[in-house]
Image (tube, rainbow, N blue to C red; front, top):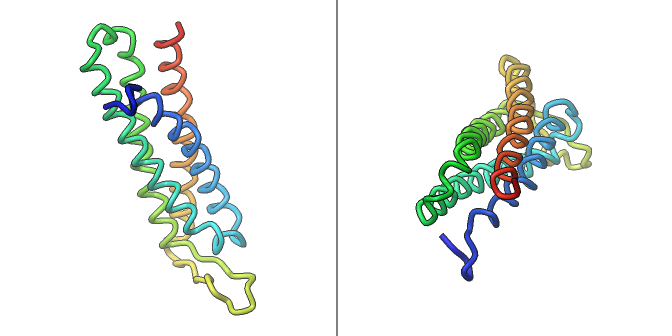
Length: 155
């Protein structure tokens, strides 16, 4: 996969590197700052979904790049494993974010009350814990995936 002769993989990886931490930090804020939930619900869902799609495209384009340049296989073996793990974590995070957006509510500071939702009394705390754990996992797994790729390219 290429865009104007450049491999797609290094271009898409930058989307994951930027949006992944932003999505994770949004999830942490959504979990631990109830008064912001009315504002963060849709950005959380969009960021989680876009990060998961970008991670999927990054792994797919990385596999395509490896097929085009088989001599890189020994250099990128660790990066490939870390990237697949990060992709799976981004899918899990997107699912946790969707569950949290459904289960957690929050009041609205708007006079109309628009955006306010009541939290599910049974699933509220587990949803908060799940999205927080998934956000931390995403943050933690982003580093080795990017670092192993940088080591493969730059030594």
